[in-house]
Length: 218
Ligand SMILES: Cc1cc2nc3c(=O)[nH]c(=O)nc-3n(C[C@H](O)[C@H](O)[C@H](O)COP(=O)(O)O)c2cc1C
View: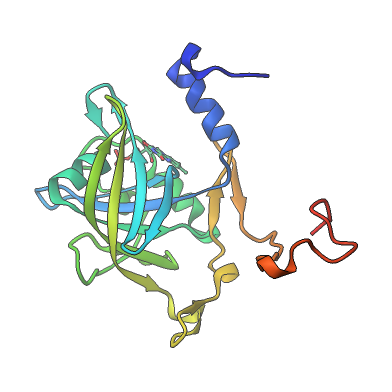
């Protein structure tokens, strides 16, 4: 079936995007407004976009027309934020911080989340998160009247000590981060525990040896 986005409502386009582009990693963003009030909220329109410079991007909408989500307003005011990644253990706390609280409500307090200080930016990081990235605003790309892509340069990454396999080689125990991803619909999530490995194919090895084809099972 063809879905022609030009003929569809914004709501229906959104439904198709989130039902298909899965799983999506979750940025659990801590920001501060110009008065110093803290805010936390999850965003799954999120990914890394460049290693050099190290850049992450987050798509942040509005609560209602003309009222950008507090995270976007805070970041445009103070130009700093922390992206925390979400492990299975923190799923419920993350969900609490997504409640549509009034501006000025500290979701970290509502979810009883402990924080740890950041080094380069004022917003703190979430202690329960295995990975936190301190970010400086690079650019806000306005995508439409109610949505924007917030690009942040990663200034530093904190990784919990017991999740580092080899500090000298910057090797992380990724499976043990036990991160969750957002799936379809309103409440579906994925664990990252069902893994398989597939090495890149050097040019010299293509075509593959007899018996291994593009259709082979992994
Ligand atoms: C797992 C999850 C992912 C979400 N992803 C997004 C997103 O990518 N963009 C967005 O605008 N809202 C997203 N939301 C909704 C926001 O978290 C929610 O509107 C929140 O109240 C915004 O908080 P704020 O106004 O304090 O920034 C998501 C919610 C959940 C639970």
